[in-house]
Image 1 (cartoon, rainbow, N blue to C red):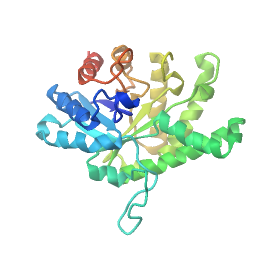
Image 2: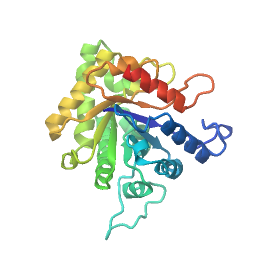
Image 3: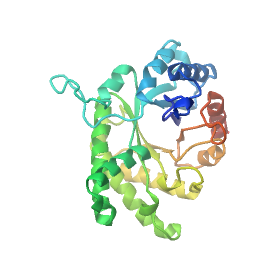
Image 4: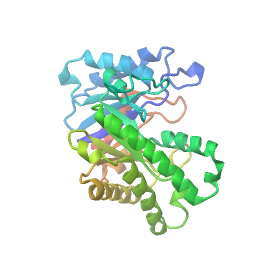
Amino acid sequence: MVQIFVNLKRFDVPKKLGGVCREADSSKWIESIIRKTIEFGLGKSDRVHLTYLLPESLLIPAIKVMTAYPGSETKTLDVGSQSVFRENIAPGGNFGAFTSNLPAVAAYNIGCTWTMIGHSEERKDKFEMIAEYDSAILSESENMKRANHAVNSLLCKAVLHALESDLHVLLCVGETAEERGEGPFSEQKPRIIEVLKSQLEMALKGTDKFYPSKKIVIGYEPRWAIGPGKTPPGADYIGFVANYIKKEVKDLYGYEPAVIYGGGLKEENAKEISNIDTIEGGLIALTRFTGDIGFEPEGLKSIIEKYLE
């Protein structure tokens, strides 16, 4: 089953306020997105499992619309959060004094079935907070490694709380331009492996006890290739990384996760990505990247069709 995730970032903010939502009422917008997705038959595919990852304010309206349809129309459609907090609520424990953060059990209670953890933007945010406290980490590679070690430790706590709370997890990993370094691909490979090994080893520690009852998917984000004007990696590069991820997780924790391309799946690259044997899907952020940028179910349908060709 192909795994397609849609990360609708800040679609809770309308265009007049600087966001990308085309409607002033973002709740009504996400309701229409879910309805069209179901009407296009994308919730009952026998080849694709589709998950929308949403800002917290859009979760309830999206789930409310989805649950109003018969289960046969939404059997391969899920809604998830864009991350969860590194601490959680539990009977006899903290009742939820986590102001401004989303505990995993709260996401589950809303109706989420998935969460994404470690997206490149989340990693960047955590790293920058550490660097703000101690700017010396930016000047020495060993200090940067220790800071990233701390980031992965925090992400691991979130991953485990998500799995404990009956959420499936999409864990994103990937190297920066600095970590990848210069030179030909043959010289970059050992450095890429070093980064990915550290991320997988730290962020997935303890997940083996939840597999296979809970799904754990790895999203590979080549962080150096994300953004306007950046050149994405070729199929050989992505295939090498996906193969390494599968092998490393199997060696470390005894299970082989599905790996998706998290660097931005779109109509232009969907066919090329689908032809990589070790990749089982992708992460979509937008369906329109120029002019009036945005997201439309029609565009999503086209990307999926191109992927399945």
